[in-house]
Length: 129
Ligand code: THU
Image (cartoon, rainbow, N blue to C red; front, side):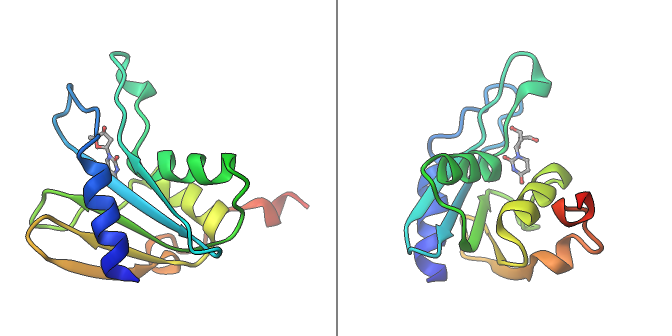
């Protein structure tokens, strides 16, 4: 499963639109149905409108009707494996819960964290009553 997700995230990274940062990221999200949704970062000239690869993958899956997820993978070209940013951790938690988060690079390094490790004591809809 992890190999397939790493391959999909690596392929997604090829479509990254990152002319400002030149930092290209790919993500692959697997739903309970087994389908894999890919995402890449898409930057805007008004930098704050940029969307990370992870959120693109999640928005694609959710907008196709998916609601339950198994794992997400993030690929960037860094020796120190790139983790999801704080905003993405929040969204991964809200939509996917405590799933495995696979981090990988282009040279075969890989590590797996759980979302609970990456976002301790999370806020979510459960607090809204
Ligand atoms: N970025 C992602 O797509 N995912 C991450 O996990 C970290 C950061 C993007 C956002 C921006 O386009 C570029 O990387 C530099 O921050």
